Amino acid sequence: MIHDLCPTMAETEKILRFPGRIEFPKITIGQSILENLQKRAHQVFQVDAYTGKTMTRYELLEKSIRLAVGLQDWGLNSDDIVSISSETQLNWFVVACAAMFLGNPLAPFNPSYTEMELLHSLNIVKPRIIFVSRITYEVVHRAAQKQSWKIELIQLDDENPITDILTLGGIISQRRQWPDPLGYQATAVSEPFRKEAIILQSSGTTGLPKGVMLSHKNMLASVFMAKNFQFEDFSNASVILTVIPLHHGFGFLIMLSVIHSNATTIMMKSFDPKLFCESIQKYRVTILPIVPALLGFLAKNPIVSNYDFRSLRQIMFGSAPSSHQLIGLVEDRLKNKNLILRNGYGMTELSIVTHICNIGSKKKLSVGPVQTALELKIVDRETGKSLGPNETGELCCKGDHVMLGYKGNPQATAEVIDSNGWLHTGDLAFYDNDGDLFISGRLKELIKYKGFQVAPAEIEHLLGAHSEVVDVAVVGKPDDIAGEVPLAFVVKTTGSDVTAEELCKFVSERLSSPKHLRGGVRFIDAIPRNSNAKILRRELLLLLAKL
Image (cartoon, rainbow, N blue to C red; front, side):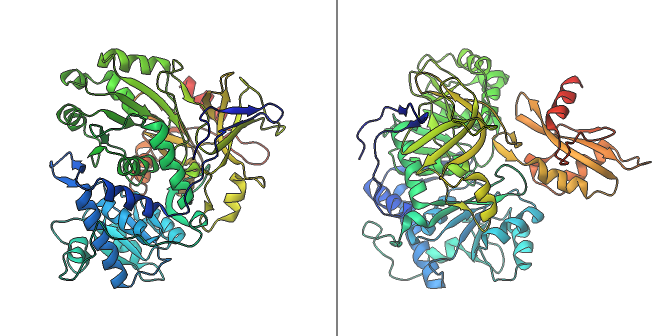
């Protein structure tokens, strides 16, 4: 229940607040999903852009319920964690829904993880079951064999079964008495607001990936935000093109939003320029959630001119900086007077999305006012003092969107969430006199490659282990298409003749694609550091600007 939707500010505290108290029912996100699927069971839910295959909401409901029952019969316990390591495909959300119906935590992995990256994430999450595709099976199988606990692998694909492992199709096609999909009830969970519903992988602000624990209340808050603000004009005719991977928080939230609305989603497992444009034209896509890198594609790639994009009503983008110039280029290129471009903001630790620019706003770079059950303030990093309108500082947030914490890492959690419950985002921001928020930069050192977070420390740790590298620092090099690409400044050992190409190959063989050194390697005599040995990245960025 909401009393008012206009943000207010306590002048003495300089805190922006969403004034209406939202009382979420004490249910799981799985119970909410089930209720919405049962309401609109016979609509088309998703379409595979590559094959044209479809899945109705009823088919999703039936398959996910059967899988949930099958997993219980197999012996899945209430606290066991279920993981998915697969590219986007129609069955991906069958597994997600099954886990959430049972109240089991869901922990998706990036399907492009190398074995080394996956080993790290497995040790955080410790899943009992991992659903794999034919593409990810070998890497997951090798990593799973090295764990001290038993991990069951189940194939997600409907076709070409992998030898000697369970398949999703095999589980749900058994001859037995299955529950009526329209009468099935999801498992209730005691204290759902304090239990993790999903564990997403995030780099936080530095270092290796962390497991972000989001509660059932966190996810209900995100769905409420999306349904009431982000996708205000969802209707039976709404068609969303989902090109953002489902293991990514933004992609996951899009799918939850589709389930809680009347929309249909067109699924792409990876970005293909021709298919992307063909799908918008063929399926008359109305809503397009993308990362800013794809704004560059829409603005500059000549292929765009060959297709009809007049069906688009909204393009929503976020997760990396944009510019007035780029937004203007997209508007000019698409020549669609009914199209609205909306800038948004969020982070995994804040349940994915917290802000979206209001429809009709003339402030193209604003991410809009404070929304849902949230408070925010802008803090001076030196003094800790809360700042007023038009003063830039670190964005801090409090409320129902704040994560439970990093799984198994209370120290890292305490570094982000202070004793008063404020989550320090690491992003520089300000709000204007109307209470609209603007993101102006970031304190944290993350590189954002096509919307993916890349922690320089992870690449630095790897390169630092190379026998011919004395010291290394990695920064983000601006890129018109990707937003940023990693670039390494390297100090070689004396007499070394290692080449930049060799070091780039060294990284690409060991880390997944977003972490490859697309910005190259620059050899320098010394890495600038302060008295505490912290890298002075600002000096490196100034050096980069001169190259």
